[in-house]
Length: 330
Ligand code: ADE
Ligand code: ZN
Image (tube, rainbow, N blue to C red; front, side, top):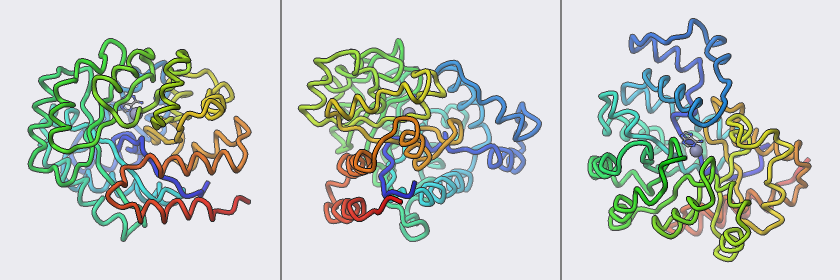
């Protein structure tokens, strides 16, 4: 669907398509444990978040140079643009690369190169969100923020991702305080597999401005009321939820109930190379499975621009919102 939208929940490493993975493997002399792209695609059967993360981290072995990261981001931006994405706030996982000996500067400068020409090349404005891996230590997160200091002009926010259960937001209080002091915005994954309490912690202890996923808030009516009252954006990823078995079938997805409750929902792709679709594909899928009408779809698109970190450029936000209102559904 080409409805103009902002993508606010997108892991750039999760856009690594099998074809590019094999091309980079060859270029960098990395051997993948799969013979063909078909064999690799056939491995995309996940039982839960961890089974996906195991493959996601393993395939990153092919990403080694600035050019690799630039190519990865450029390929994503081209695909996103073709599906109506006008603005993308892109996550990256520096610790997954520094742990393999790739310097953080290589990652950020490579991604930055693609992002800085994206408006001109693809008509997509961009921001970069540095995510901490929550299954690593709080000290490692602090060290990562420190290592990112020479590149802060390229980074607008911090996030928190990877294996959720057993790694509550409170573990990262100190690094979020440090990020606040540096003037960075704050988001965190919470309530994907973890309990509603993790969403409360992300709000109360980390001070996040958006919650990534947040699906499990629906188990806690008081929390829902608070999220509605405070208009906290939730960055939902419907196809991801089905592939990682957070919901059984797309027709069971709570998105309609969440919209009916007045939650500020947005629709995003998470790791589109692995989960069967980019942002527009996610919009198509929820329209078809959940019988969303054009006004509900328009609300989702409007929500995405309202939730974007565009406070420094309200003129741009207004332009994007006007595009949403002008969009004609066929
Ligand atoms: N890293 C990449 N995708 C993720 C997801 N859906 N949840 C947590 N961490 C992730
Ligand atoms: Zn995610």
